[in-house]
Image (cartoon, rainbow, N blue to C red; front, side):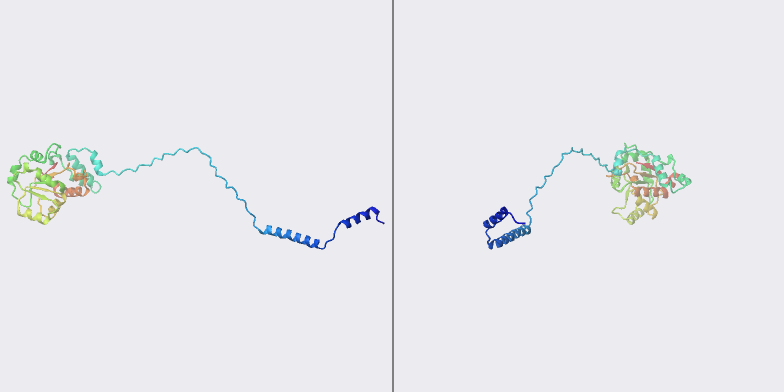
Length: 281
């Protein structure tokens, strides 16, 4: 089929206007190479990260919680014996107090019959101090015939009157009886600064009318036959005086035990026989 004239003329016009330069192919290749190179460079460079805005913290306002008032449990302060004794008013000692003390001490270890044997009748006791007397005035009331007893006492290793108290109270007792004792001799029977052998030697060599001492030392002297109680007529127990800690003699366990042991050893028997009278000062 023959091409038309119009088609032939169009092709001629295109060929006429297109210039064939051999360098154009190279330029096209270079341009394409440049494009690929720039594309590769752009790919090789790390992408610049845009800085993200840090989100600002947002706090929701909450209603304030009411602080719970926690009440701490108070520790119970352990009661001291001085606190208890400070609240208890001093009462005059009576025979029933000593009887109750003996019953409580021996109640668990003794039979009913043995406890009955330790009980004393009211006739075994002297009038108790009503807290209005000094020691001298109290002795004058309970021993109106003291002068006669003092003159008749000639035995060694013995005393007419025994006063049992704490060691701190011994010197006060010895000084406070000056108006009562007259010219009688008083021997201090306690463990501090005086050895028991020295006291035994003094009792053997001389005659003493009053012995003022602690229950422990008097008990030791009786056990070692340094002190004889056959001539003793009165035994006075300090019942009301208190030390700096407000303790009485019977509030201290060791002293209380020594006192009860001494009473059980010989005093209760002598009281039952009527030769010794007990007094609570």
